[in-house]
Image (cartoon, rainbow, N blue to C red; front, top):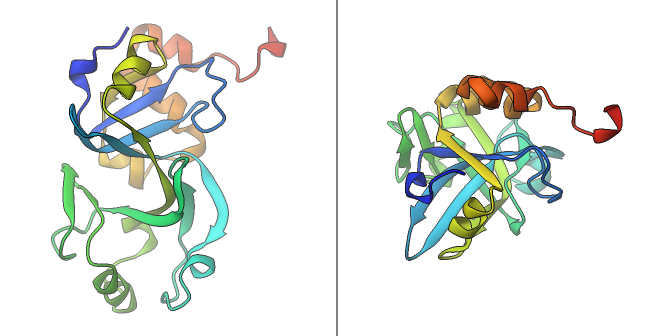
Length: 187
């Protein structure tokens, strides 16, 4: 069982392999905010949608970006994680090399100016959120493993293999868990 004391921004939650939760099955959630009194906010890193940024934002510059499903909360909202916090005002540094949000108009300007490319930013509809004590309870029930986040998980890893990759990086028993089939019918 993972310790709730390890929950903090800049970590990833890794769904246990037998979860039947449709929102989080075999997901990796990047935590952007956490406080014991205020709850937790994060984004599912490995669930692509078929949406494009132009379907969501009319005046967005030409940009080939995949939209990811961030989670089941406020699915009419758009969020973004990026690695250009040094040039994007109002960005919040979450961990080394990874920022959350920032001035959206300036982001569009930086894209038009070719200073930001699709490899620098990931967009999410909705987010994953837990109220005070909710994530602690889920951790106590063994719903999640927790580990450090790395910029490569967001910007360089193949999202379709991320759940397995993160578990393999933990080694030992987790490498075995990563090899478990997605369905039990293969057993």
